[in-house]
Length: 303
Image 1 (cartoon, rainbow, N blue to C red):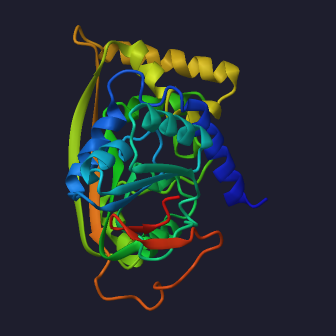
Image 2 (cartoon, helix red, strand yellow):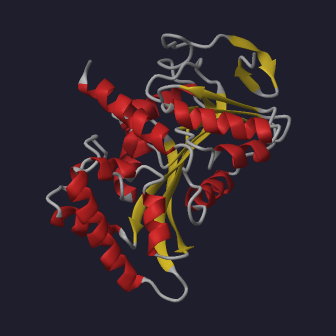
């Protein structure tokens, strides 16, 4: 097994481990920015949308509402646990215009020119090869289609977390033991999108503050999402020391209003040119899902 495959398996295991509580402790951080991303890219009724690294559906479910019954949305994620939870929610809410599939974003099983929109909320840095993933997004977009994504730029508790991590003998930049790609500047994102042949690139910053009941609830939220990967890099004693260090500092920042964490996000969108690319049209990947006659503006098989 290659290093990239091993990293993907570990990442899938981590997110499956947190799937049941993901974005369910404290304020709905992911859901808030997910809804914002859907609004930002201007999804229209009847559109066919792909949500890559869909997780528990922060982008997925707002996208379903945006396309309406005439549209279609497909969510994919490497974590079977995330897909299981999203499928359960879709069934509970009776969403008939939605499918969720376990799939690698770096090797999409869809024909070229299948989607009007491809979205990726907070997922790009976790891909082992972001440029390859962007190339796949470009391939499956229809000419004139739009790609939109969000990325963490900064958050107010980052220095607190990283200083405590360093104090316990670990490197915060290597905490996940996965090659997380640094894409926290608009300039680096624009270059990456341009290399993937996207045009009309736009990057903007959006910030929002989230209030937790107290530092304990904030710590609980950290264990319910991807930051848990950092914690797993510490052994039992170091992890407890790290928790004590973090909580001592967090309590000094807590007020009668609770613990406030402010996040700045990069929102970006870019277009696939309406001029057909001879290298994309008709290109196929192993395991491609067969096409069906155009239905509800979506060429992907819905059976």
